[in-house]
Image 1 (cartoon, helix red, strand yellow):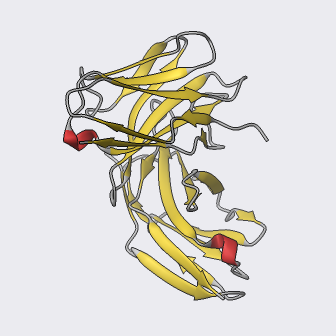
Image 2 (cartoon, chains in turn yellow, purple; image 1 turned 135 degrees about the vertical axis):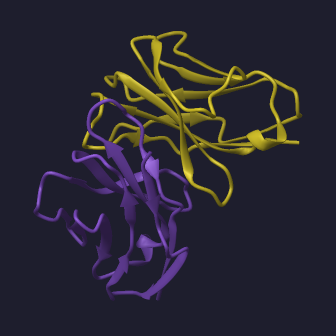
Amino acid sequence: EPEVTQTPSHQVTQMGQEVILRCVPISNHLYFYWYRQILGQKVEFLVSFYNNEISEKSEIFDDQFSVERPDGSNFTLKIRSTKLEDSAMYFCASSFQRETGTGYTFGSGTRLTVV
Amino acid sequence: AQTVTQSQPEMSVQEAETVTLSCTYDTSESNYYLFWYKQPPSRQMILVIRQEAYKQQNATENRFSVNFQKAAKSFSLKISDSQLGDTAMYFCAFMKQGGSEKLVFGKGTKLTVNP
């Protein structure tokens, strides 16, 4: 069964450093998403991406964050200058169509720890 | 804005028994989708079941079924014949139909199935 693959599974970084979280969505999917889950809290929407541009973003997704699909297969989330409060699980997801009532396919997540 | 509330942070059930997880939501929308996602210790978010708001019939997927009460804005998940592999976090989620692609999640219910 097709999977969304995220790497690394766990990343530790120092405050102020840049991090790039990587995702390989399912190959025929067109819509891509990042969500995050701070420990013990809700899973929160960050951004959606389609046709090489952001289609929707939350208030969490400020200028510190950026996304891109550099090579047609990877989908990355960059945090420019990490803060302690960026520590969370980050989930990538993809779907074949927009607003899918079938739900997305999620990856296993990257646990980001900022120290 | 939509909100999703899961009032049971933790639940436990004996193997082979039935358990019901509660979810309520708040929205002014008429058309939307509702989902239950499972997050086992492997961390991947797995779609368990979905419901279109315009359908009166409750969705069923094998041992999983929902009780969708649109007027009450309630969407509970029933797991029959619970298995050890059902041990996981369960998240209820809402998606508006039209205009937004994001999932709005509840805080989750940690379900433990005991042998």
